[in-house]
Amino acid sequence: CGAAALFFVYKLGVFALGAVGGLVIGIHVLQGREESWIVLAIIGCAVGGGLLALLLERFMLTLTTAVVGAWLAVTGLAFFIKGPQFAGALAPQGELTDERLILYGAWILLALLGAFAQFAAPRRPAKSEA
Image (cartoon, rainbow, N blue to C red):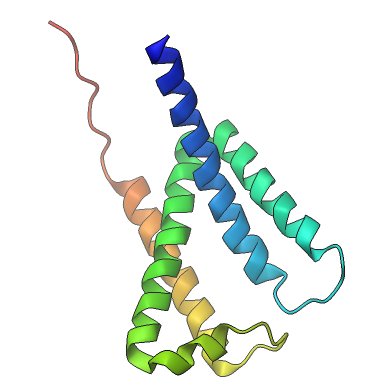
């Protein structure tokens, strides 16, 4: 019973990680739009990311951790460089300013580097019971 519960919690975590990745991507793709269906589309991105993570587990875990980690690193670094007025660069204005383009470019570059590093890292062999 305990093993089944741990398996469920693991799969729930995989779904949650994929959902967060889908949510982050959905928010930034649809940012600045005022249509009433945007909220449902963002929720759909989160659910789709979670389901995709369950289907393509290793690939999606690697990609999601790279995307979310890159976003956290880029926004944290930008906050420390620019200070409290940094929040204005992320406000949904619907236009791509130079600050926003630099932020997104750094995010994509760091996410690609993170994903490449994770995919290129050698896998550890499974422990065999002797």
